[in-house]
Length: 52
Image 1: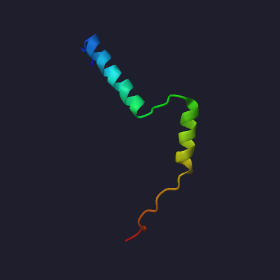
Image 2: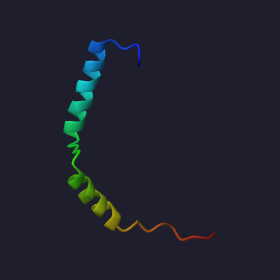
Image 3: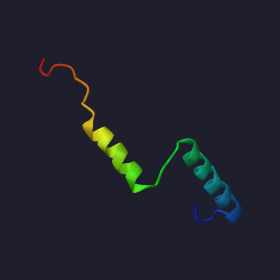
Image 4: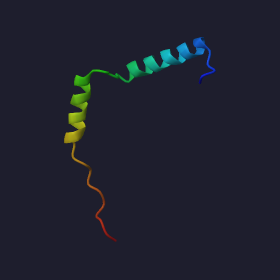
C-alpha cells in the first residue's frame, strides 16, 4: 500500500466513505453506547442440548 499513488489512495478513501454512509455508520459515542446496550440486552439463542 505504500507504493500507492495519491490519486488511487484518494479514490479508495472515497469508496470507503461512501460505503460507510450507505451502512449508516456513526462515529458518535452516544450511538455506540445505544447499540452496545441493545446487544448486551439481547438474549442468546438457545443452543442444542449439551451431551451426547
